[in-house]
Length: 377
View 1 (cartoon, rainbow, N blue to C red):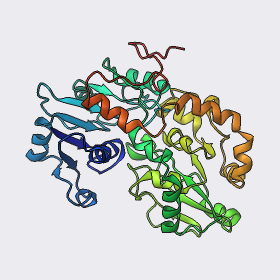
View 2 (cartoon, rainbow, N blue to C red; view 1 turned 180 degrees about the horizontal axis):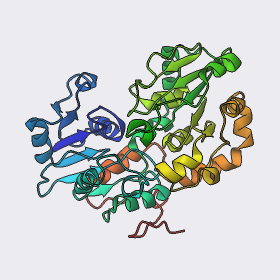
View 3 (cartoon, helix red, strand yellow; view 1 turned 135 degrees about the vertical axis):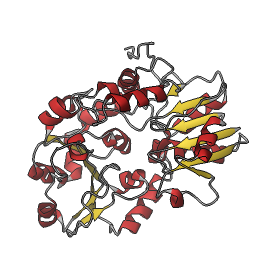
View 4 (cartoon, rainbow, N blue to C red; view 1 turned 90 degrees about the vertical axis):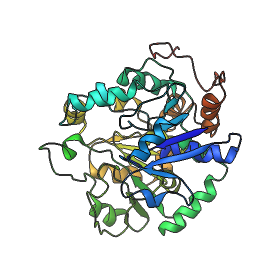
């Protein structure tokens, strides 16, 4: 059996990595594995991992000869042979509108969308981390194939018995001493920051003020989106660590004591940990009405406070324990809706689906979803 993997422009990351590692650990399939590696990422793969450089005949051959293709994003054009299974895992619960549902698109417009749509025609399965996420995922991609609700393999580590030990290791590596509150700030990217004539990238959270007010007891872990990881290169503020290039965001979820984000899917993954979440939506109307729009109202679904100003963020993260207690009810409802399938066994469920024909996802993990993707209640 031949398996080809692709993640985020050719990285060793995300759901494909989790599935690769779990398949190796299970050892129940004799498989040849090859990863599509992007420029600058070839050296980040584990020793002994076979790779093929993106854009080369070798990469195309790896895809076209594979029995199983696993990706978390759109692939370059390739010819899918009969018998190949293309598993599209995607990479998050969509709060913001994506693909055909987004209000704005990249400058290339319809040409890019047509190329992405062509990739969708090859998909055999599209994973969903929850029944709630399955609905917008199916709609955005106009995908009429199976959308099994399995949970995300990449999130299994967040429920692992080894999570506490991993947290301690990561915090030590980051220099976070015992008792110091780690605040992970993980904003998403803005279309008008990356494309066109929009504003230059800016950080809405006041780092200097964070340092002045909370620096003695807190540390800020700054995690920019992978599309703009170097936008603030050289940040030098006491108590602020730029972890945008850290290879595994799950390490940061474990190390952190509270998450601050905006419209990122990070909130849905982080909620598995049970730790507080603050939604910092300083540009809410612009993002809703001009840039993307939303599938879910952030004010309605939020697991914690929804704030508009930098000082409000500092108020919220000053005492994570009080924050947890204050929003316990909202948090529980959020987890029930978006994390019900995240039990630490998603990778096994997914591998069983693609390697053992006829396998079904347990009903308690995957509530019934109609052919149109509408969750049955």
